[in-house]
Length: 213
Image 1: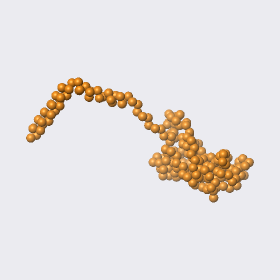
Image 2: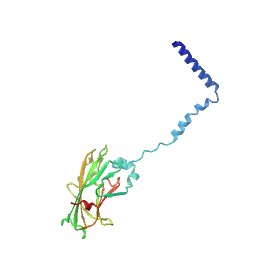
Image 3: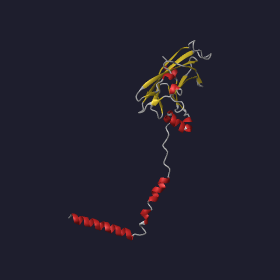
Image 4: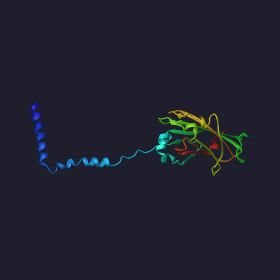
């Protein structure tokens, strides 16, 4: 039985080869099929989309200088919102706001009679660590006052300020940074924060004076 099946298979193969040989003109069509692959091979592959969070890597920043030089726009939300910085998994929220009389040792402009202390909590929700720039040079913290968003005078906080942030924030970890400003009394206050001003959009928390305790 096995030999019979083999014979049948050989006969079928022979018949197929005969039909192929008789088809002369038609057999050229399959031979031309590689031209399809040649055509597709000549089409350049689509470049992978760039991620601004990669600009934190010095080598990437150098090789993509133009891309990393384009600072994104500012996003604004209420004081109670949580800022999410795209492509990083990093989140920020206002943890506390304190407003009191200006410190005589930190004189601001003539109309800046209050000292505003703001603490931000940062959390890494990504699967990779978030790397801060050395010495917090790219971390920006600004207090803006009034409807026209004038910039308040800022003061360095140490310890606990942006210069004391860790080198990196691992997955699931949180940290805080505190900043101080002198500003006019009884005016609307907005706080702008950016963990990497050269690569990420700035987030502005509007109406932070409403969180003061």
